[in-house]
Amino acid sequence: MIYRFGLVHYLPGGREVPEGLEIARRLEAEGVDAFHVDAGCHERRYWASPPSTQPPGCMLDLAAEVRRVVRVPVIAVGRLGYPDVAEAALSDGKADFIALGRALLADPEWPRKVREGRREEIRPCVACYDACLGRIQEGKYVTCALNPQTGMERELEVRPAPLPRSVLVVGGGPAGMEAARVASLRGHRVTLWERAKVLGGQLVPGSVPWFKRDYLTLVRFLSGQLERQGVVIEAGREATPEAVRAAAPDVLIVATGGRTAIPRVPGIDSPHVAMAADVLAGTRVAGRRVAVIGGGLVGCETALHLAEAEREVTVVEMLESVARDMFFASRLHLLELLRAAGVRILTDTRLLEVTEDGVTVAGRDGATAIAADTVVVAVGLEVDGAAVEALRASAPEVHLIGDCVEPRKVYQAVTEGFLVGRQV
Image: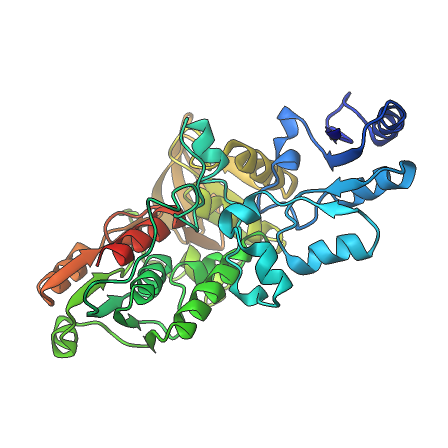
C-alpha cells in the first residue's frame, strides 16, 4: 500500500510537521509500504498542485523529513520535471523515488530521453494547468497546452504528407514554430520568417519573470526541433506581400501574432507610458512608483515582477476581479504573492487619463488620482487586421493561426499550430 498525504497543511489550525511525522510513524507501524509526500489542502491547493510560482522541487524538504523517521520508501512530488532537480533529490537522499505527473503529459518520453542523454529534446511543462486540471474542471479530457497529442495520440497521429510541398510560415511565436515543426515532420519543405532577431514572439518578454522562465525553455525546445528537422529559419525577415509572392510558397501559414492594445484616453502617448512587454524586456525602465493598467494575467505578472524589484505598484482593473482567466490554484497563489509584495489592486476601476504625475481613474467612489512615475499598459493584444488581410492573397493556400486570429493563450496558439501543420 502506497499512502499519499500532505505532511503539512500550511493553514492556521491545520496539520503541522510534527503531527504529520507522527502520522507517518503510526501508518508505517500498521503496514504502509511507501509514502508519497505532498502538502497543502483545498485552501492551499497551490502546494498539492504547484503552479509556476512555486519553485521546482518545492516539497522535497518535506519528503526528506518523512524519510528521516520511516524505513519504508518515500516518494517525492512537486515540479520535478527537471532532470537535474529530480536526480539531486535521489542523490541527496531526500527521496527514494520521484513522481512525475504533468511532466509526462507534456512529454511522455521524458524518462527515455533522460536515460539517452537527450535532455534538450524534452518538451517542458510550464505549470500552466490550462489543458490538464483546467480542463478537468470543465468536464473535459486531460491534454497538455504544449502537446496537443496528449490523450489523442491515435486520432492526432502525424503522418507523412502524400505530396511534399513548400510551406512558408510567417511568425516565430509558439503558433508559428509548432506549425513549422509539424509540417516539417510530415515531409514538407518548410521556411519560417520572423521579423524579430530571435524566435519566441511574446514568450520572449513574457519569460523574464523568474516564475515564467519555463516558457524560455519552450522556445529553446521548439527552436531546437526546427533546427534538427532542417527548417530554414530567417530571423529579422519582414513578410511583405511582395516578399511572400516572390518566395512563391505552395502554402502560407500566417502566425504574425497580435499588436498591443492601447487605451484611447488623453495622455496615453506621454513619455512616461510604457508597454508591459517593453518593461519586461528591459527596453524601458520603470520608475519607483508604477501604475499598471490592466489586471489580467500579464498585468498581474508584470506587477509582481516590478514589486519584487522594489517598485511601488498599483494595478488598475476595470472588471470586478483580477487574473480571472487562471486555474484557481495558480490564481490563489499569485494573489497571495501580490499581497505579500505590497501591490495595491483597484478593481471596478477605469482609466480616465494619463497625467504628468500619474493617472486619473474612476472607481466605485468616483474619480481619483494615482501618483506614478511610470504608467505600464497591460490591457492585452488585439488583432492587426490590416496586416493579416495584406497577406491573405499572397499564396494559393493560406492559413491563419494564433493571436493574429484572436489573442488567446499559449495553449490555443500551440494547438492551432499543430492542427494546421498536420493538415497542410
